[in-house]
Length: 264
Length: 264
DNA sequence: CGGCCCCTTGAACTACATCAACGGGGGTGG
DNA sequence: CCACCCCCGTTGATGTAGTTCAAGGGGCCG
Image (cartoon, rainbow over the protein chains, first blue to last red):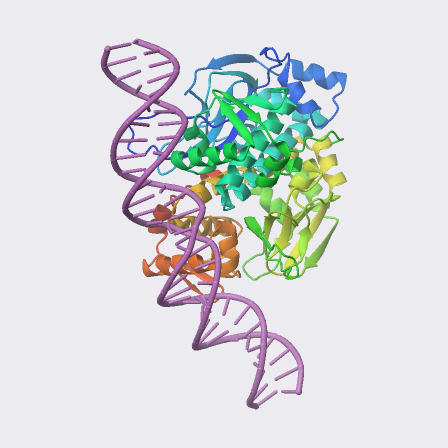
């Protein structure tokens, strides 16, 4: 479920050559408190849950743990026994090219067994652990819930597809704009935005890693977005100044996020 | 399940600007006959099936249909009632940027409902249709099968992730090599290779679309691969001349394809 | 106060795209 | 059966979006 790309340091290594794949974010309310049950919140974004289903989900989380900034929630090659759910903070899936890697364990690990990527904490992260046995039990007795969990994997795939198109597309300005659009919409869907802005505790270098751009070019691209009056970014806070034009520049169509409530 | 990017012509349109996302291939035996039940074959690549499960799958395919080269198996925005399984041929998921789109319906459509991309036939394609009702019934009564189907969605996501990394990486030579490695391994897993080669009925232009390269550069890159003695490509047939060096150039690690048999 | 990040800016380089043109093979129509 | 043509592969020349290298300044932490 969790989906963040972490900026991890491994200074001694000869090849710190890696790439963030997807950013994800935690699910806290406006006051910064972790929602009572983010798993329920996540699933209810896409379909209605019965009381029984909510009850099952309430007991799905075995325990929670805080990861420090820079730590790996899961590493490539791990065979985790729990899926992880990001409650709070920013993390990212990532792969390192030509040698090491890292990753966050999430729903994928339940069916995939062996992680093919890593997930690292970009900020301090609070993470819930859902045992694979619990998920397996859900597939045995709660087919509707199982379909919703399956859906989340499919949405991840959809996000990845969009990423391929966005990265493959030529313009750095468009890629950058698209990332801001996606972050805004996804954060808003979990109540993590204020007005027309949101908190983005990342460095330009980390942004570059998710977009496949150099730090220098990220900088110039952001300056261009600022110059065109599309966003401002002061400290950790990003403000969308002109949503309509930003979506135009980004060629952004949020339908791939499946933020639509319907029977699944 | 099906996973091809189609080269569709829409000459009148002003913006034929699209991108292939994933190539996929059909499942025929060495004589070119469609396997008796490719769905069973696909799932058995990753876990053992019981007799009962095999029986259920045998009746899952409602009907089959042949798509001509250039046709769309599914289009973006569709809400298909069946998932599609590519029996024979090459197809590709794709998105078109800034206006139209197309797509093949596959397992994703079952949970996602509304296609966020298109799937088109790169060659003539024989396609099986599995009604969503049937899949839903499987999730209700065959949890193990349901997990395997879920797995396939997760594998698609893993392939997408790899694609992001590959496309984001700098070198065209590496991308190209990686694509050949992936195609070889995936085709071999369904018995579609001969010796150290396989059939690749695609144009260089189509290859470029999957890798985000221009036709011209695809051409020069392939010439470089040939010059280094890594592959030959005559007519439709690609031969891997030096697998070890090719995987080095590609930085290829097949583990993301999950071609491992284990309980799921 | 010193040292690191991080952001920012300038300059040089390069991998790729784009434009343009030609040859060959296969399909199609005369 | 030949002639045409279109598509595909190939090659050359030119343009450019991005990288890499380099350096300075500001804020934050020890």
